[in-house]
Length: 306
Image 1: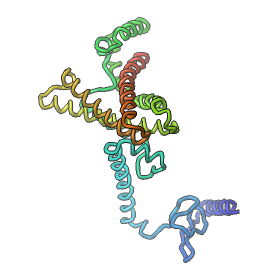
Image 2: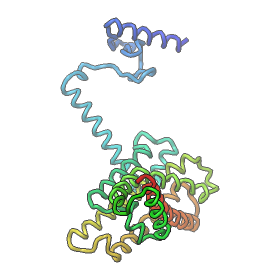
Image 3: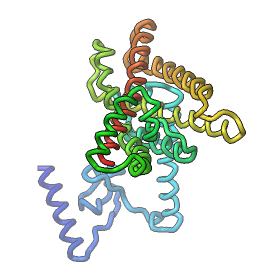
Image 4: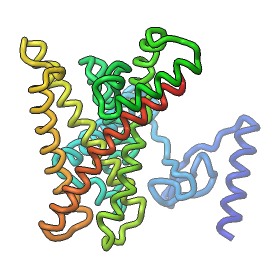
C-alpha cells in the first residue's frame, strides 16, 4: 500500500512538472512536502529520493557560496583523511572498507587512481620511469634482453621496417601503456593473498581492496623516490642512472615497502609476528617479481602495437 501511494505521488509530481506547475516544499507542524515525490515527509530528508526541504537562504548568493565551500571542503577532507590513513596506518583503510566504514574515506579504486595520477605526474616532471624502459634498455640491459632481441628482429622482419624507425614510437607508447595498465599488477598481487593467508577466510573482494591500497602506497612511495633522485641530480649529486644511487634508493624503497606490508598484513589478516614476517617476505618477493614481469609485459604489448 505504501509503495503504491509513493508511486502515485511521484506520478502526480511528474504531471505537475509537465504542466508547468511546481511542487513547493511546504512545511508544517507535521513535516514538509517533498518537491520530487509530492509526499508529506516528517524527517529532515525524504526517505524516497533523499531530497531535503528548500530553505530561502539556499537561493541566496551566500547560500550558494556555502554549498560550494561545503562541497570542496568535504572532498578535500575525505582526501586528506584517506591519505593520512593510507600512509600512517597501514591496513586501516582495508579494515574500514571491510567493516562498512566507507563514507569517511575515498573508495579503493579512487585511492588507487589518485596515487596513479600522482606517480605518473612525478615521473613526467622528473623524466624518470619506473615501470617502463626504452627499447634500447630492453635490448641490452634487461634480464630478458636475448629474448627481446629475437622478438624485435622477428617484428622488424614482419613489418619490413628498421629499428631506428620504431624506437621513438616504442618509447612514447611504453610510457603510456605503463601508466594505464599498472592496475594489472595490483590484481595479480590480489591473487596471491588467499594463498599467503589460507586460514583468514576473507572474501576475495577484501584481497582486491587490500592489494589496491598496498599498490597505492607503493605508487606514492615510488613518487617520493623519483623525486629524491631528481632533486639529487638537480643539486649536482648522483641521479637514478648512477648505479650507486639506483642501488641505495632501491634498497631503501624495498625496506619501506616490506615494513609497510608487515604492519598492513597484521592489521587485516592477523597472525603471529613470525607468521607475518614470513608472509611479508613471500609477498615482497612476489611483488618484486611482478614489477619485472610487468615491465616485460609492457615491452611485449608495446612491441606488438608499434
